[in-house]
Image (cartoon, rainbow, N blue to C red):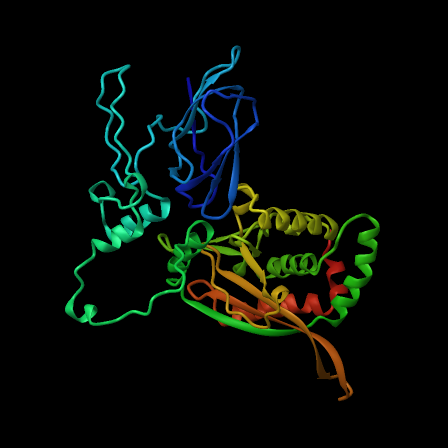
Length: 404
């Protein structure tokens, strides 16, 4: 008998929600066959079978939260295969309530401890119970078959103080408990407020860049590839970061250490139906414009479908958000630790500007706002970096001198 341990499928992820089982107990499975879909803090991930065999037990029900390195399912290895535990140095554990402490297994060898009944409740209710410090097994659920509801937890907070009881709160027209990506973002933003941010804004004349893009786009389409402006933004970004490596860094507050990165891995903020997802385009400095455009297209499609893999969410050294794609002009982005910088690109506008002869001309103007971690960067660092990036965007032919 083998146990499949839930692997570490994303940076900082300690648990995920079981969304849908694609097999049942007793089903035969083949190596690499999809077995279950789980929702991490960042995306919907499909987990496949490590080897062929037969499923003997599913340790979590749909809607329950599973801890990383806990046993997700058990299976009997197909005849001729070697039985082994999968992808975890930890011993197999039974599925336990997230509200119960992990106790030592004191049963004699070969004998299983009796299963502790699990109080029926949704992941959102379990999360709320943890925040309120309430033990679910002490709550009498008012839902079907004793299921604990949010109202049951709120009822335990009564009676309110005399001041609170005198306040009449307007009834909400709709109440939504955040989960999945949006709940993860809320937790991440609470951590991000501890970073001392500063912001730097710049206007960039992208008239020449748009003209170059229009010409290259035709050639790219002839090769069956769609070339977006984001590929040009990223490629020029990698060149500017090579000149200003302090911006392409990570900060570890525990040791007060700054880690400088040799490679440029750009996190790309994607607006998806389930929330903001940030897949990572790796080794931007080594891509051609065509290969970079293909990778951007691949990750964008996966992110919007909620199918981006954990590996594609790891390792960003800097993040770029194109808020202009939604019509925004300015934004003040929030840094994703341990990175030290994030940029928000605004929409391109046709605006009047003076040329070298003092004549008013129409130019394509794009705004960008950078946020920097003031523990690592100061205004001068950010200004010099941004002006280098601006130089490549306003005179895109200058990139040719640095392309390998």
